[in-house]
Amino acid sequence: MIYDYLDCTVQLAPSNTQGLVLNNPLMTASGTFGYGIEYGDLIDIESLGAIICKGTTLMPREGNSQPRLIETASGLLNSIGLENIGVDAVIRDKAPVWAKWRVPVIVNVAGQTIDEYTEVVKKLEGVIGVSGIELNISCPNVTAGGMQFGADSKIAAKLTKEVKNITGLPIIVKLGPNVTDITDIAVAVEEAGADAISLINTLKGMAIDLKAQRPCLGNISGGLSGPAIKPVALYMVYEVANAVHIPVIGCGGIICAMDALEFLACGASAVQVGTANLLNPHATINILEGIKEFMSGNNIKSLREIVGTCLP
Ligand SMILES: Cc1cc2nc3c(=O)[nH]c(=O)nc-3n(C[C@H](O)[C@H](O)[C@H](O)COP(=O)(O)O)c2cc1C
Image (cartoon, rainbow, N blue to C red):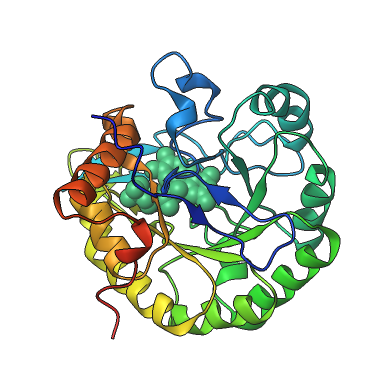
């Protein structure tokens, strides 16, 4: 179907001079879609709203020991541990490909120290093909950094401010559920200048191999994703969208268009699809089609009419 008359555009960085306009709200969640390039022959990459690449660190990382992925009831536990090629290889090998696409690519950045985050962001500043940064302050699968920056509102705000001071690129801060009060952290990063907030990263968990009498994952614990976490993610998005005035990006367990629409109703301006990509590389495109069908069937001309309808 042709739904050209529908307005699905989203501005994710309204206060940023560079802005971050997406043609539609469908983004691929970091770590579940590689660098996008791997999917080029499978789907029409440019019909996505945005691509978020694998978490990127200053130096390449090998990640955690195997096994690193295990299926659970309606979910997936991963303990990849931020395996990635490092920022220099991203700039050298990936960005030139991204530069030819009309779809914005956002680099997910991780680090063990605030200096590492800022070093990576400095290198990405001005690189053609990079449209924004997602600060991953919520990775549960690394021993240093990651989640520790997102669990304390003061540290989260300090990191956000330092990154904002050195770049004009739009900054999305990615929050995780393994915290006492996610709204505290959301408000702190908003005050520190974040352009948008994405949530949620995975929930820390474990699985047991009874036969071997040991944890299934080489790292013992991992991050839970997939449909099992959707109700948790929805509620957190609802709470955060209620507490901040910057765009919120919802993520966690989105498999179909109805899931995505629920996040939009809870105040998300856009959504990220993660685990569903591993089941079906067309998931994001199918979800986008489903949202457009829903809009057309309900005489909704602009996506903005749906955002936040369930908020108090
Ligand atoms: C295999 C795997 C790798 C991931 N790697 C990253 C990462 O590098 N950076 C990050 O911020 N989130 C990472 N995530 C978390 C996802 O981006 C997403 O926040 C989470 O999976 C919840 O969404 P979902 O239920 O749709 O998968 C990863 C998730 C999975 C399953």
